[in-house]
Image 1 (tube, rainbow, N blue to C red):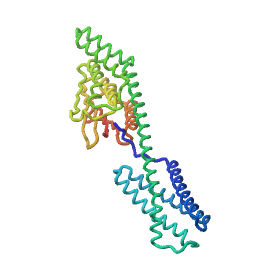
Image 2: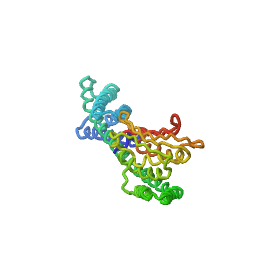
Image 3: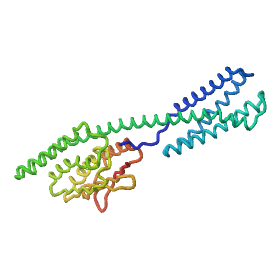
Image 4: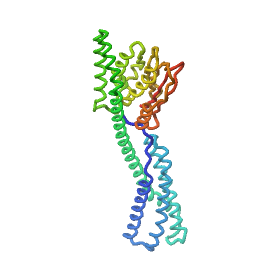
Length: 348
C-alpha cells in the first residue's frame, strides 16, 4: 500500500543545475552551428547569445512555480500546461532575441514578424527539453521519497513490534496474567485457564513475528489484538466488556500493523484498571468518503483523574505522520457522558 505523502518538492539546487546544463548545451549547439556554417560577426553573435540564453534560463525557472502548483493534477493536464508554458516562453525568448540581435545595433537586417515566429519555433525545443527533464527529476524525487517512506514505515513497524513486546512481557503484566491463570486453576476452571494461557501464547508469538507487514487488513489487526483482549477479559472478569463494532464491509481496509495496540493498552491502563465498575470498551469503524475512521471508546469512570495521552498515543501519531504525512490524524479526549475516546482518521 502506498504511503500518502505530500507532493514531492524538487531540490532547488538540482533543478538550478539542470536548467544551467540545458541552456549551456543549447548555447554550445547554436555556437557550433554558426562555426560550422561560416557567418559574419561570429564572436559578436556568440556574445549576444549569452544574455538570450540567460533569459531563457530565467523563463524556465519561472515555469517551476505553476508546474509545482499542479503536481496533484492528472498527468495529461500537466503536460498540456507544460506545452503551453513552453510555447509562451519560446515567444518571449524569441522576442528578446530579436531585441538583442535585430534592434540593438542591428547587423543582420531588419526584424520581421515571420523571423520572430520562426525563431520562437526553433527555440521551443530547448524549453520542451527542459520540461521533459523537469518531469523526469520530479518522478525520480517521488520514487526516492516513496522509498524513504517505505524504509521509515518498516522502521516504525519494527519499533511498534518491539514496544508491544516490551509492554507485553513487562513483569507487572506477566505477573497479573499468570496470577489470573493461577486463580482460574484454583477455582477449578481449567478450560478457562487453558484459554487464557493460549491467548497469552498467541499474543507473545504474534509480537515476535518477523514477517509482520507495514500494512494489513483491519480484520487481521483486530484478530491480532484478540489475544490481548482475551487475557485482559480473564483478568478483569465481569469488570470489562469488549465490543467489536467494525462492519464487515470495512474489514478489508488496509491499516498500519499494530496501530491499535497502544490505544487498547491505554484504555486498560488508564480506564479499566482504574475503574471499580463495569467498563465497556468499543472499537468502531466508519467510512468517511475515501477515509476510514477508527474509533476506540471506553465508558470508564476512573477513581482518580485520567492522566494525559502519554507516550503510547504520541507514538501512534508519529507512525501516522511517517506513513501518511498530513493525510491522517489522531484525536483523543473525553467521551460523552464519561470515558475516553480515541479516533484515527486514515486515508486509503
